[in-house]
Length: 220
Image (cartoon, rainbow, N blue to C red; front, side, top):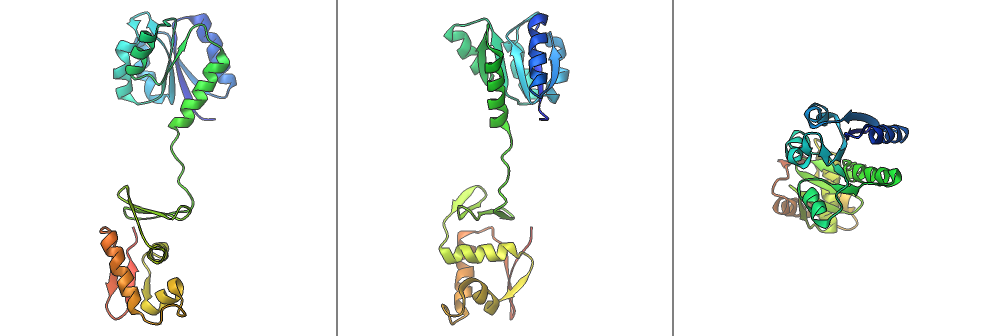
């Protein structure tokens, strides 16, 4: 576990216990007991556990500036239990709110939740990308510049084949053999028709026509 947590808490006894629990859970921990030292530590944190009341006053008055440094999940710790206080805290940019006294197990569970939610999505090994076109082989979805594009089965298969072999030139006969099979389409004109359809549905696609040879999708 490589995540770094920043604990901002002026109650040293509480802080010592929390730091020990967080380290036992496998987190690297940073600590500040006042607002004046938070800004220099904030960029290194993946999540911040923030006491609402600090020696300098309400930490919410600083929160927006700290989030400008780096946007990370913030869990507020506070003795304020009213609904209005919770709403103010969440509206100020905090991701979660935990009232004192609290169970350390609950805090750890909330930390795991928010770190998991904030983790970057891992790209699928079954995704092919060419330029701004993203092809998901599992869901058979095609996106260009974030927009879904509907293709027929054959258009999809042709696009996938060209994308997987971007930069390589294929004759019409080779494309027929690889995508359709000669038993289904005896003429090479169908290749030209489907290339045209792909160009119309995916305006950003870069399929080159090599006269007298065939087609090639440009590599990224």
